[in-house]
Length: 251
Image (cartoon, rainbow, N blue to C red):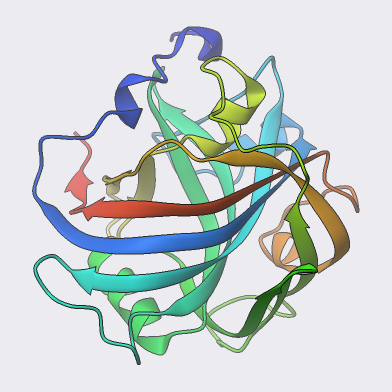
């Protein structure tokens, strides 16, 4: 097996030659990351996936953001179903030293339609949550409370955050920031325990250091992950425009 340090991390960021099935825009993304022992993360992964590490360290992330313009390709966005809020708990994986991507422990969204569609099409562990999010000159306030009996509870997040004054930049290839945020593959498992993957594509994130003014979180704990109270790494991205592709079964 290849070392994580030798994995090709650039090729997955390139736009695939596949049919786009959906478009959506992501706003006010906060990337919070905690260092977690790799063995503890590996124990939570399905067969066929290996925990991805950076300089020997594994990471678990909490990522809240807002979506708008969510629509199938060639269809217009509909105001009452195309905009909602989401927060996910994730880690980073690869398959036999190739295809680095994301494994989601949970994804909470404020749209019952989005939850149902993502579960049906992608076998993703989506849950319905009451989520309030507002942005002002003082930053972004994000409150999520899971209200879905299919998921562990309590599973809540209360966050207040914003970017620092540093200008946004692209994460350099080979940096920790690139490892944490520039992920374009996601993995899922179906009811028959078959492994699938799906692609997304967008321009590189305009990353800034994030200011975290408030954090109360039980979403990561609900995923069965022990962590420190405060995240070691905090990043913010204002917006990306995203293309979504169909999932495919991994051979």
